[in-house]
Length: 297
Length: 323
Image (cartoon, rainbow over all chains, first blue to last red):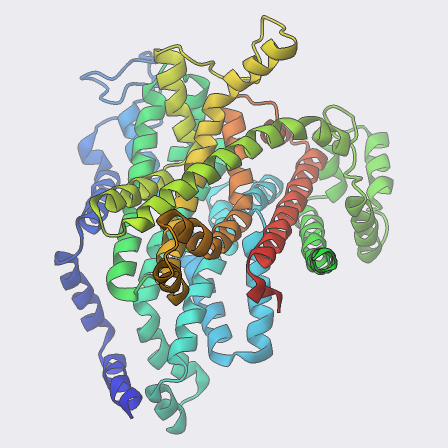
């Protein structure tokens, strides 16, 4: 009896729209711990810098000049590289590449993970068993090394990087969503929707999805962070796209001049670390306050 | 006790078989998926016609796909990964030559990171909610978020370039050739920075998961019982609570070993450490695909083996998993 009473608020929550859920999430930010605010601030700074790069520096990230390997100064706040290209411009425009790869791979992996996790959690049984074995196998495989082999064979390029990272990164999301769906699978509002004749697609889309939304947001933040990390790994190994230099590619070039030019590794690295840390802090904050510790795996 | 372990090992070995098959199948699929003729991909840039023909018959690219697959599978599981295009040596012997250096660095880092990570995680859980706990949690999230190769670059800038305390890279001093004890000292000296770099990621991860598992374990009734019976603090902490938490710690090490090995690859590149990582790097640069796919399959087998070992360890630690 008590259980039925407790289940009621959940079914009301399920009917409230996505908009109210997002705005209550934003309202929650005001009461969040300092760490979440720091995370949001880091990500906001990076997004601002990369979006408004042309306003922040007049330099062209690909333009060569005779000012080679200059240390940071008034003309070049982040110094110049061995071909005289402006460090600040390369970090700001490099962020566009890193963030886009991170964002698009995360959309792909969260989409895949959500679909697989929902189907596994909702239907259970043999289908769940098979999907979870595949998920486990995927988690054990050295994801980054698989990505290295595939990208070397099919060729580097942003689209290939996004595809490979996205396809390899879904297990974390799938596990979290499956766990959540298993919990709400037996709630009354699901039974009510099924009894009123809704198809499983409709039940998943209209009744289950809004209830895993906060978990998806957490997962998405963590996935963007891990995809940016994966991209930097590939670029550092020489599998980046030289026409679209990302932070990882800048760090790879910096490695060659590590002993002569500290600024070539320091600044792109700070940008990369700030972004990943910011996203992880956001994910942890969202996870702690809304999803009750969805976990990062 | 002994037969139980044997049975467990056998069961784990059988569970690893499909994973090994999956790795080999995936590798075969990747080679076939690559644009262009697989023989010319495996033969590298500008091969002679004779070499192309040899590759075709070696890999059987002139035969039906299923027969090619069986040949590939048979060779891969027996350690025949083909011939390196660059050095012309068998890939497997090239890998074995480089493997000890990777084991030395990764193994040391794993021991260091486990010891410190567990201490930090337990200390943090014991004072959960305190200022120290918050500080440790923040520090471990930073460590987890910072890319390993950048940590390595910063350590080089600080300790090798600015302060000149430690070597920039390599495994032994280039100019002097030491023997015996001096040689050991020299290698240890070169190992400090790469091991520290690789430990950061592993240490923070172990600390995070150990903390969570310890908080959960300390909340159990049997911990209360042990305390009530008058067991000392240290005994309750390590014998009663940590025994349960260690299952999580070991599972995490097993599951994340793939990431650790990938981390070792970039750390080796940053520090010019002559292990598997450099091999990956060179293989990518020289487009030496037999070497690349061989190094990948070999690393994957190691990851699968470590994972199986961590499963066995968990089962031995927690009798409930044994069923």
